[in-house]
Length: 119
Image (cartoon, rainbow, N blue to C red; front, top):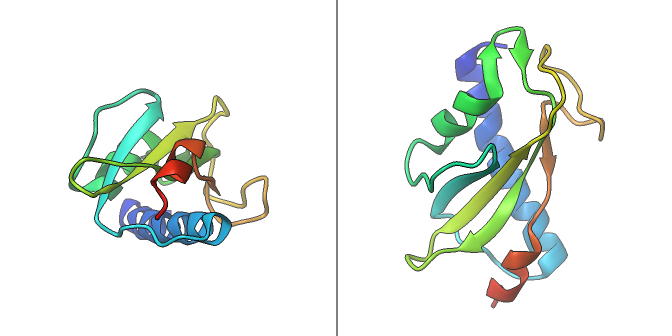
């Protein structure tokens, strides 16, 4: 998979992670986003989120980290939904199905910390 295609995949999985959380939490979440790597630990990123995720997930067309938990973490003071991600220790490999049978490395989760932010 090429980098541009992977970034498009990231965009679709970000939205899917938000929808997944909304379904389980029973609330609407903002679409103004920020991002933070939980592991490997990283700063809060407020622009070019797909670039930041690709930086730590995409090595080349044949090597992509195969398991990344991703989903809503918090709502910051500026009203942005912070998406968090944790990259597992699994070795990178070609783009394919993850352990849940979905395309790509992203396992859709939400962090318990977001529950208290639902309105």
